[in-house]
Length: 171
Image (tube, rainbow, N blue to C red; front, side, top):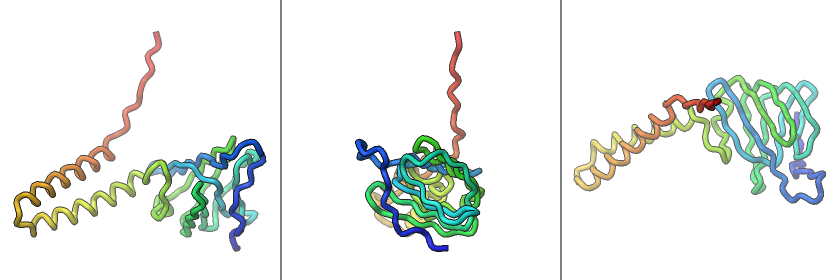
């Protein structure tokens, strides 16, 4: 099934030049969020493209393809057979519930990388830095690299910390 090539967003509110919608991708491992102008996915009826001001929609996501258009006009297409889940669109907010993290590996949104993907990237950088540290002889370079390694370790530790829930006090 081909995905529609017409990715230019339709804005039914002609007074508004803002064509962005909020996208939130939720997996069992965490969340990813950002602003996009359109999302194309497959469901049991075929290809669907979501643009701003679409009516409320609940649908299954299957078919293994997502196409996301960003506000700067760039597009990102993710193809993975594990793209299975549900999508809810309401008030220009798209909530995409996926079963697997692996489908998100090539995806990056404004809200940042998926925590587990970011952790994997930081671990790779840490491994490379530690190997490089063994080869260095210059003490200044070694000290700079040790500081960089501590920073990477701190970033990994911050990802691993459980999010503290703020409890509202009622009086």
